[in-house]
Image 1 (tube, rainbow, N blue to C red):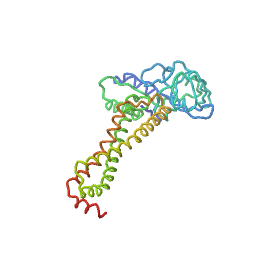
Image 2: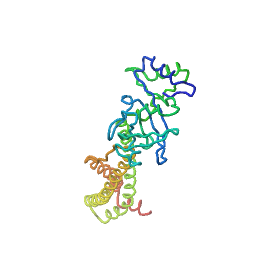
Image 3: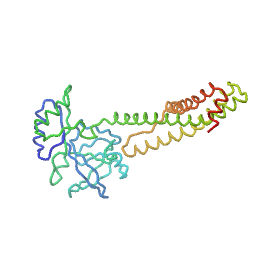
Image 4: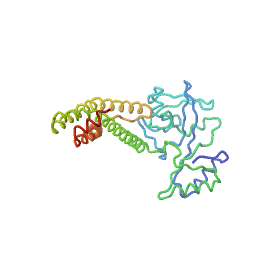
Length: 309
Protein backbone atom coordinates (compact mmCIF):
# COMPACT_ATOMS: atom_id res chain seq x y z
CA UNK A 1 0.00 0.00 0.00
CA UNK A 2 1.60 3.26 -1.11
CA UNK A 3 0.92 6.61 0.46
CA UNK A 4 -0.26 9.54 -1.60
CA UNK A 5 1.83 12.70 -1.19
CA UNK A 6 -0.78 14.47 0.96
CA UNK A 7 -1.52 11.47 3.23
CA UNK A 8 0.26 11.13 6.57
CA UNK A 9 1.75 7.90 7.90
CA UNK A 10 -0.16 8.20 11.19
CA UNK A 11 -3.46 8.31 9.29
CA UNK A 12 -2.53 5.25 7.24
CA UNK A 13 -1.46 3.24 10.27
CA UNK A 14 -4.61 4.11 12.21
CA UNK A 15 -6.76 3.11 9.23
CA UNK A 16 -4.96 -0.22 8.87
CA UNK A 17 -5.08 -0.92 12.61
CA UNK A 18 -8.85 -0.30 12.72
CA UNK A 19 -9.57 -2.54 9.72
CA UNK A 20 -10.66 -5.98 10.93
CA UNK A 21 -9.77 -7.48 7.56
CA UNK A 22 -6.07 -6.67 8.04
CA UNK A 23 -4.28 -9.22 10.23
CA UNK A 24 -0.85 -7.58 10.19
CA UNK A 25 0.99 -4.73 8.51
CA UNK A 26 4.50 -3.26 8.55
CA UNK A 27 5.98 -0.05 7.14
CA UNK A 28 8.84 -0.28 4.64
CA UNK A 29 11.09 2.73 4.14
CA UNK A 30 13.22 2.80 1.01
CA UNK A 31 16.42 4.85 1.20
CA UNK A 32 19.06 5.54 -1.46
CA UNK A 33 22.39 4.73 0.13
CA UNK A 34 25.84 5.42 -1.32
CA UNK A 35 28.79 3.16 -0.46
CA UNK A 36 32.37 4.27 0.12
CA UNK A 37 33.24 3.56 -3.50
CA UNK A 38 30.30 5.72 -4.68
CA UNK A 39 28.09 2.74 -5.58
CA UNK A 40 24.36 3.45 -5.07
CA UNK A 41 22.27 0.74 -3.42
CA UNK A 42 18.59 0.76 -2.40
CA UNK A 43 18.34 0.14 1.35
CA UNK A 44 15.01 -1.15 2.63
CA UNK A 45 14.38 -0.56 6.32
CA UNK A 46 11.86 -2.78 8.10
CA UNK A 47 11.10 -4.14 11.56
CA UNK A 48 13.44 -7.05 12.45
CA UNK A 49 11.98 -10.43 13.28
CA UNK A 50 8.67 -10.03 11.46
CA UNK A 51 7.48 -12.80 9.13
CA UNK A 52 5.64 -10.66 6.59
CA UNK A 53 8.58 -10.30 4.21
CA UNK A 54 9.85 -13.32 2.32
CA UNK A 55 13.65 -13.12 2.52
CA UNK A 56 15.20 -16.35 1.21
CA UNK A 57 18.48 -16.42 3.13
CA UNK A 58 21.35 -18.02 1.19
CA UNK A 59 24.22 -17.57 3.65
CA UNK A 60 24.37 -16.25 7.19
CA UNK A 61 21.25 -15.23 9.11
CA UNK A 62 18.56 -12.53 9.14
CA UNK A 63 19.50 -9.16 10.64
CA UNK A 64 18.55 -8.51 14.27
CA UNK A 65 20.43 -5.45 15.55
CA UNK A 66 20.17 -1.92 14.23
CA UNK A 67 23.65 -2.02 12.71
CA UNK A 68 23.14 -5.30 10.83
CA UNK A 69 22.01 -5.77 7.22
CA UNK A 70 21.51 -8.54 4.73
CA UNK A 71 22.30 -7.87 1.09
CA UNK A 72 21.22 -9.36 -2.22
CA UNK A 73 23.59 -11.94 -3.67
CA UNK A 74 24.23 -9.76 -6.72
CA UNK A 75 25.48 -6.85 -4.63
CA UNK A 76 27.60 -9.09 -2.38
CA UNK A 77 29.29 -10.62 -5.41
CA UNK A 78 29.82 -7.29 -7.18
CA UNK A 79 31.37 -5.70 -4.08
CA UNK A 80 33.32 -8.78 -2.94
CA UNK A 81 31.57 -8.82 0.45
CA UNK A 82 31.78 -11.70 2.93
CA UNK A 83 29.83 -12.40 6.10
CA UNK A 84 31.00 -10.11 8.89
CA UNK A 85 32.31 -7.39 6.58
CA UNK A 86 31.52 -3.77 7.38
CA UNK A 87 29.46 -1.89 4.84
CA UNK A 88 29.83 1.89 5.16
CA UNK A 89 27.04 3.84 3.46
CA UNK A 90 25.86 7.44 3.41
CA UNK A 91 22.19 8.44 3.52
CA UNK A 92 21.40 12.16 3.29
CA UNK A 93 24.91 13.06 4.54
CA UNK A 94 24.57 10.65 7.48
CA UNK A 95 27.26 7.99 7.52
CA UNK A 96 26.26 4.52 8.73
CA UNK A 97 28.58 1.59 9.45
CA UNK A 98 26.67 -1.66 8.99
CA UNK A 99 27.71 -5.29 9.43
CA UNK A 100 26.68 -7.75 6.73
CA UNK A 101 25.27 -10.80 8.51
CA UNK A 102 23.67 -12.58 5.55
CA UNK A 103 22.94 -12.71 1.85
CA UNK A 104 19.56 -13.44 0.36
CA UNK A 105 18.04 -14.18 -3.03
CA UNK A 106 16.66 -11.04 -4.66
CA UNK A 107 15.16 -10.46 -8.11
CA UNK A 108 14.98 -6.70 -7.98
CA UNK A 109 17.81 -4.61 -9.47
CA UNK A 110 19.90 -7.74 -10.25
CA UNK A 111 20.13 -8.52 -6.54
CA UNK A 112 21.78 -5.19 -5.71
CA UNK A 113 19.57 -4.38 -2.73
CA UNK A 114 20.14 -4.35 1.03
CA UNK A 115 17.63 -4.80 3.85
CA UNK A 116 18.20 -3.46 7.36
CA UNK A 117 16.46 -2.47 10.57
CA UNK A 118 14.00 0.42 10.77
CA UNK A 119 15.88 1.51 13.89
CA UNK A 120 18.43 3.11 11.54
CA UNK A 121 15.85 5.82 10.86
CA UNK A 122 16.63 7.26 14.29
CA UNK A 123 20.16 8.06 13.08
CA UNK A 124 18.98 9.97 10.00
CA UNK A 125 18.53 13.72 10.55
CA UNK A 126 15.12 13.89 8.86
CA UNK A 127 13.50 10.45 8.91
CA UNK A 128 11.10 10.19 5.96
CA UNK A 129 7.68 8.68 6.14
CA UNK A 130 7.35 5.03 5.01
CA UNK A 131 7.61 4.43 1.28
CA UNK A 132 4.84 1.84 1.49
CA UNK A 133 3.17 -0.70 3.78
CA UNK A 134 2.90 -4.44 3.48
CA UNK A 135 -0.31 -5.91 4.84
CA UNK A 136 -1.48 -9.46 5.43
CA UNK A 137 -5.21 -10.00 5.24
CA UNK A 138 -7.32 -12.23 7.40
CA UNK A 139 -8.12 -15.72 6.02
CA UNK A 140 -10.99 -15.92 3.52
CA UNK A 141 -10.98 -12.18 2.85
CA UNK A 142 -11.21 -10.99 -0.76
CA UNK A 143 -8.34 -8.65 -1.58
CA UNK A 144 -10.47 -6.70 -4.07
CA UNK A 145 -13.03 -5.86 -1.35
CA UNK A 146 -10.35 -4.68 1.08
CA UNK A 147 -8.68 -2.64 -1.65
CA UNK A 148 -11.88 -0.81 -2.49
CA UNK A 149 -12.67 -0.23 1.20
CA UNK A 150 -9.23 1.16 2.09
CA UNK A 151 -9.03 3.44 -0.92
CA UNK A 152 -12.52 4.77 -0.21
CA UNK A 153 -11.92 5.30 3.53
CA UNK A 154 -8.63 7.12 2.85
CA UNK A 155 -10.12 9.28 0.07
CA UNK A 156 -7.37 8.06 -2.25
CA UNK A 157 -4.62 8.58 0.32
CA UNK A 158 -3.73 4.88 0.20
CA UNK A 159 -3.05 3.28 -3.18
CA UNK A 160 -3.39 -0.48 -2.84
CA UNK A 161 -1.34 -2.77 -5.11
CA UNK A 162 -1.67 -6.53 -5.46
CA UNK A 163 2.10 -6.98 -5.03
CA UNK A 164 3.83 -3.92 -3.61
CA UNK A 165 7.37 -5.25 -3.74
CA UNK A 166 9.30 -8.19 -5.19
CA UNK A 167 10.34 -9.17 -1.68
CA UNK A 168 6.78 -10.38 -1.14
CA UNK A 169 6.83 -12.76 -4.11
CA UNK A 170 7.62 -16.37 -3.09
CA UNK A 171 10.78 -16.78 -5.12
CA UNK A 172 10.71 -20.57 -4.94
CA UNK A 173 7.40 -20.56 -6.83
CA UNK A 174 8.15 -17.73 -9.26
CA UNK A 175 11.53 -18.72 -10.65
CA UNK A 176 10.70 -22.31 -11.68
CA UNK A 177 7.50 -21.06 -13.31
CA UNK A 178 9.49 -18.55 -15.38
CA UNK A 179 12.07 -21.17 -16.37
CA UNK A 180 9.46 -23.78 -17.28
CA UNK A 181 7.52 -21.28 -19.37
CA UNK A 182 10.67 -20.17 -21.17
CA UNK A 183 11.78 -23.77 -21.69
CA UNK A 184 8.40 -24.81 -23.10
CA UNK A 185 8.49 -21.97 -25.62
CA UNK A 186 12.03 -22.80 -26.70
CA UNK A 187 11.17 -26.50 -27.03
CA UNK A 188 8.25 -25.75 -29.34
CA UNK A 189 10.39 -23.35 -31.38
CA UNK A 190 13.23 -25.86 -31.64
CA UNK A 191 10.86 -28.61 -32.76
CA UNK A 192 9.37 -26.43 -35.50
CA UNK A 193 12.81 -25.35 -36.74
CA UNK A 194 14.16 -28.91 -36.78
CA UNK A 195 11.07 -30.20 -38.61
CA UNK A 196 11.23 -27.49 -41.28
CA UNK A 197 14.96 -27.91 -41.84
CA UNK A 198 14.71 -31.67 -42.28
CA UNK A 199 11.74 -31.30 -44.65
CA UNK A 200 13.94 -29.09 -46.84
CA UNK A 201 16.85 -31.54 -46.65
CA UNK A 202 14.60 -34.49 -47.45
CA UNK A 203 13.03 -32.70 -50.42
CA UNK A 204 16.48 -32.14 -51.87
CA UNK A 205 17.10 -35.91 -51.78
CA UNK A 206 13.87 -36.92 -53.47
CA UNK A 207 15.32 -36.69 -57.00
CA UNK A 208 18.10 -39.10 -55.96
CA UNK A 209 15.48 -41.47 -54.52
CA UNK A 210 13.57 -41.32 -57.81
CA UNK A 211 16.75 -42.21 -59.72
CA UNK A 212 17.41 -45.18 -57.42
CA UNK A 213 13.86 -46.41 -57.90
CA UNK A 214 14.18 -46.00 -61.67
CA UNK A 215 17.29 -48.21 -61.84
CA UNK A 216 15.54 -50.94 -59.88
CA UNK A 217 16.48 -50.49 -56.24
CA UNK A 218 13.92 -52.27 -54.08
CA UNK A 219 11.72 -50.52 -51.55
CA UNK A 220 13.29 -52.26 -48.54
CA UNK A 221 16.75 -51.14 -49.59
CA UNK A 222 15.51 -47.60 -50.20
CA UNK A 223 14.09 -47.54 -46.69
CA UNK A 224 17.38 -48.80 -45.29
CA UNK A 225 19.39 -46.16 -47.14
CA UNK A 226 17.03 -43.41 -45.98
CA UNK A 227 17.08 -44.53 -42.35
CA UNK A 228 20.87 -44.76 -42.47
CA UNK A 229 21.06 -41.19 -43.79
CA UNK A 230 18.62 -40.04 -41.13
CA UNK A 231 20.62 -41.70 -38.33
CA UNK A 232 23.88 -40.22 -39.60
CA UNK A 233 22.59 -36.66 -39.91
CA UNK A 234 20.51 -36.55 -36.74
CA UNK A 235 23.04 -38.49 -34.69
CA UNK A 236 25.84 -36.10 -35.60
CA UNK A 237 23.61 -33.11 -34.84
CA UNK A 238 22.64 -34.52 -31.43
CA UNK A 239 26.25 -35.33 -30.51
CA UNK A 240 27.19 -31.72 -31.15
CA UNK A 241 23.98 -29.89 -30.24
CA UNK A 242 23.14 -31.47 -26.87
CA UNK A 243 26.49 -30.84 -25.13
CA UNK A 244 26.62 -27.30 -26.54
CA UNK A 245 23.01 -26.58 -25.52
CA UNK A 246 23.38 -27.97 -22.01
CA UNK A 247 26.74 -26.24 -21.61
CA UNK A 248 25.25 -22.85 -22.54
CA UNK A 249 22.31 -23.49 -20.20
CA UNK A 250 24.64 -24.28 -17.31
CA UNK A 251 26.66 -21.13 -18.06
CA UNK A 252 23.49 -18.99 -18.15
CA UNK A 253 22.24 -20.35 -14.82
CA UNK A 254 25.67 -19.89 -13.25
CA UNK A 255 25.75 -16.24 -14.35
CA UNK A 256 22.17 -15.77 -13.11
CA UNK A 257 23.08 -17.31 -9.75
CA UNK A 258 25.89 -14.80 -9.40
CA UNK A 259 23.35 -12.00 -9.79
CA UNK A 260 20.44 -13.15 -7.63
CA UNK A 261 22.04 -16.02 -5.74
CA UNK A 262 21.16 -19.55 -4.75
CA UNK A 263 20.48 -21.02 -8.20
CA UNK A 264 22.32 -24.29 -8.84
CA UNK A 265 22.70 -25.66 -12.35
CA UNK A 266 21.69 -29.33 -12.27
CA UNK A 267 21.11 -31.29 -15.49
CA UNK A 268 19.37 -34.59 -14.61
CA UNK A 269 19.53 -37.71 -16.76
CA UNK A 270 15.92 -37.15 -17.78
CA UNK A 271 16.99 -33.93 -19.49
CA UNK A 272 19.37 -35.89 -21.74
CA UNK A 273 16.60 -38.33 -22.65
CA UNK A 274 14.25 -35.43 -23.37
CA UNK A 275 16.89 -33.68 -25.44
CA UNK A 276 17.47 -36.76 -27.58
CA UNK A 277 13.73 -37.19 -28.10
CA UNK A 278 13.32 -33.50 -28.93
CA UNK A 279 16.12 -33.66 -31.47
CA UNK A 280 15.18 -36.99 -33.05
CA UNK A 281 11.38 -37.02 -33.34
CA UNK A 282 10.84 -33.73 -35.27
CA UNK A 283 13.84 -34.55 -37.47
CA UNK A 284 12.51 -38.03 -38.21
CA UNK A 285 9.05 -36.70 -39.07
CA UNK A 286 10.47 -33.98 -41.28
CA UNK A 287 12.79 -36.41 -43.06
CA UNK A 288 10.41 -39.32 -43.53
CA UNK A 289 7.22 -37.46 -44.44
CA UNK A 290 8.40 -36.39 -47.93
CA UNK A 291 10.13 -39.77 -48.38
CA UNK A 292 6.83 -41.54 -47.77
CA UNK A 293 5.21 -39.56 -50.59
CA UNK A 294 8.07 -40.44 -52.98
CA UNK A 295 7.59 -44.17 -52.33
CA UNK A 296 3.90 -43.88 -53.28
CA UNK A 297 4.46 -42.46 -56.79
CA UNK A 298 6.23 -43.85 -59.84
CA UNK A 299 9.95 -43.13 -60.46
CA UNK A 300 9.13 -41.18 -63.63
CA UNK A 301 6.69 -38.94 -61.76
CA UNK A 302 9.35 -38.25 -59.13
CA UNK A 303 11.99 -37.44 -61.77
CA UNK A 304 9.56 -35.22 -63.63
CA UNK A 305 8.54 -33.35 -60.46
CA UNK A 306 11.99 -32.80 -58.93
CA UNK A 307 14.25 -33.08 -61.95
CA UNK A 308 13.05 -29.82 -63.51
CA UNK A 309 14.34 -27.82 -60.52
